[in-house]
Length: 440
Image (cartoon, rainbow, N blue to C red; front, top):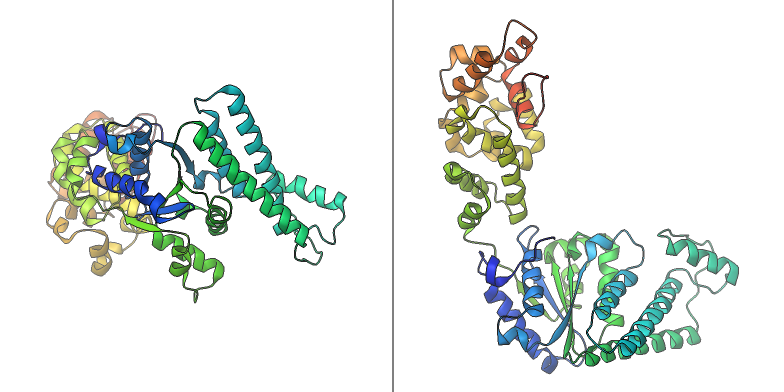
């Protein structure tokens, strides 16, 4: 995410209210628990969780109000999905915390001491975590070190040796490491005159199920520290489903997930989508159609952004602006179908899907069949020339433009005689039919 979002400048969805509630909960967290506090920001995919978390992070780092200034916190932002290609869930999280400590404005010798301690302990704990996957018992040092070397490169070796539980000594060493890590983190928080460390973990629901679960387990086992607050951006339902794929469908996955979370805050679905679309596009003549499409297909914020990019590219690269008054409205719907129902989009223009009313009403609003769109689709097996002759609609302007601007007696004839379905398909797919006619 390159742009830095703020509540002050980018709060079109009025989510500062949610941010204020979150800040108040963090203020109270120390009274509620004597170890780490975990808050889940729950919302479906694409609803704008990442933008909200970025707004909240930036508000803490550059506060405009006392509510945020008094949090007096260091903030770590960690995108779990960007790191789930690693086998070890502990190391990338520790790395992001390390980098945050590195940016602290404290005395250099103290900073160096904290960083060295944290880095050393993180390596030891990562190695200890590895032992829980591949036990050293029964494997000699040479083989074990080779396993550790390969594991560190992102690969796994599954040993055929019998897995034996760790010894009491191993458990004691591991617990000592965890205690030391907690001490270093508390020291780092206090050294910068901060009261809290806020760790934002985003996109957890998009990770591999095993990586997501391991991340939650690591939060519980290694970062149960007073004044450390975790904020998880996730789709609770989707993550519960991921957990069920690991532990079985009969498991109470939601109950399992709740074990790790103290508070769940539901991020509301935006109710002012029209204002957002107006802010994001210059296609003012088609706002009503765009809003209708977005509403009909129940698009998320992420869907809307992708949709607007596609229709604006379509508009920009289409030299024939004459047809856009009416015909472009229909193309808006076709582009939406391409994004949301790609299989049906291809069938619509090549097979007999237009004869299947029950399927059509699922991918198009019923009202659209009263428009010129019906003429376009119903003529899918006809050529562009036949459409011009038989259907004097808004599309005639577009197809006559092809004939007027190009020599149909030469190589371009093949374009004029294209079946209308193929012509539309190529146009929306942003294909170039030949060197002379760009159907974009």
